[in-house]
Length: 311
Image 1: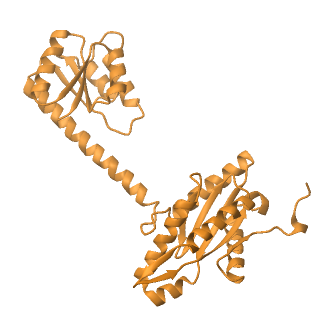
Image 2 (image 1 turned 90 degrees about the vertical axis):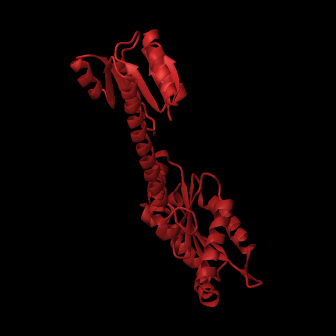
Image 3 (image 1 turned 45 degrees about the horizontal axis):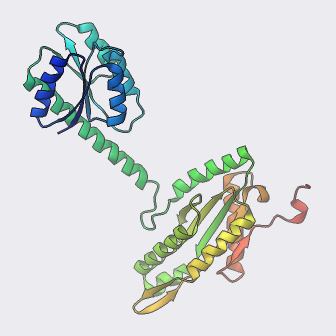
């Protein structure tokens, strides 16, 4: 059953339609003119709108166009009530976005059948919309760790890099790699390796700021993108991430398995990165430095003094 907005200026006709709709189990909200109908549509968010074409203050065709143009994520069917033989109004109604029409005088059984049909279409449309949203969501999320996947990371990186150039503020990238992850898989098995990946992702999510973006870059690598953040401030966050992971102990057959990460930090402005890809490469260089220097540490990409621009 549905929540129906009835827009009808004739009190007699409105009572007749209300009686039929309520008899069919529907909830009915009534408006007596086009402007009141518009206000009720916005406030009540009905499942279906049933309205006369000829209305005071705002005619039904204009109201239909306004309803269909409203930026809502939910499909709202509109059924127009027309006079016998008013072909031009029917055609204009469909042009304005109407989904169906009823010619006066109409039978209550026909009214209920048309309403039922439109509500069924609405349900299908709403289900399709939810499915599309779900598919869009899962296409951007890494299923195992529940952080953004590499595809989504690349999209966000491009947007934040361009924004940093436009508004002249820095952007910082942290590359993260789980230390000796192959040994974890070889020693304890891949299912336990998945547990480690999920735990590291959870530590990252709980440590970063709300404005930061975490993603699984691939394998045992993660990234954190920090808008409006210098390399030095990014390094402070990276150290918090390193400590958060190091302090975790994951149980395996009664034993606590230590897990650590290495991190590399680079900023867009300070590094002079000329593209998002170059920023990734520079952060990756810093990560390699952390691995080479003994792992479980943070390294910042440093611009050589002779390459720095004079102030």
